[in-house]
Image (cartoon, rainbow, N blue to C red):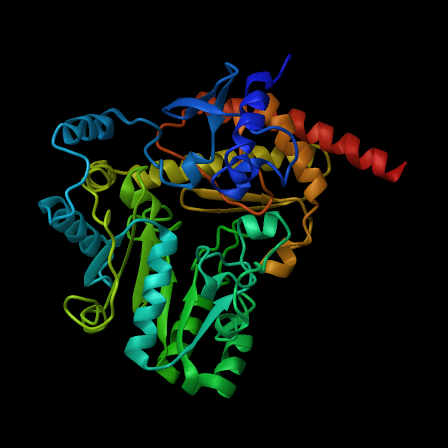
Length: 439
């Protein structure tokens, strides 16, 4: 197979002249896996197409939003119609209210919702709100959980920070980072110990209930319930960052799946149908502190943008009205994971496969993965070989060992079969790598 990315390489070199690192989000640069990132020309259904003429079965899905597949005809139809009415008003619209209503019905813990423009903006805003409500300053986060790139939470973060080996960013003042306490994920005893010492100063715990930014890591049975009980005991707020898991692991997100009620929730990705969006919401008594209802200031020129609201509404309508959607796509995801795992075992590998709902992930280690430290034990070099072998066979995975992958309703049985077959060839290359390491 003659696989080249000549046009993409030229485009990447040109991009570096004008954009830091040639990309507008670090993991897109392929720095973690090496090589040239394909520059994408278009997408449709389960596939993306690069400027070199290659077609890929896509399991990135724009990092999660494309749960229906790319360019879904009903979503694009609604967007095309909305474009004729203008792209931004800076004034209230019925669309905002309708999408907020759909979200509150799907996620009952979100009694009121405020729209913003990104997941980062949502988590940044929700921390300010939590501190104002509790009149406390300290925040607890979990190692390997990524909540955006603002100062308070860019401490032992996952996602691109883990991929690039810089989990703590220069430019974050010590005075701000000092109010962020980091605890290991899935360690309820460790969380309780921190609260025993500093509980009166802790405003909130923010957590990805299903972390997807150190690879896909699953909560141990009962763990999220323990986190909820600890926060209630000390009067701290529990914030679920469901930017990734919201409308992904279930229609009502991880809080529906695990039957946990947080005080505040952050959303993004799926609720914008592929357009820039974020949201935060929660208990009415907390949310009414936000301006103009209350004194906690937060604003945004493009918040509630009519195009993002339109795409989000079209997406949620399809998700809620398509009978058995989550059951079917979850079943498809499980079939893919089972098939890939069987291919790994044919080569004698006992890697870790995780799946929840329409999210899945593979760790190149034979040891259980349950937190940031255990995820970091993965063989990154082996993953990189696997990644490029899959890419060359037309399968587009996240270019990092430390990112989750995503299934969509557009993926067909033929896509699944082709991906499983490609994984067999890719694992054979990994086996050659291990043989050379032993030699």
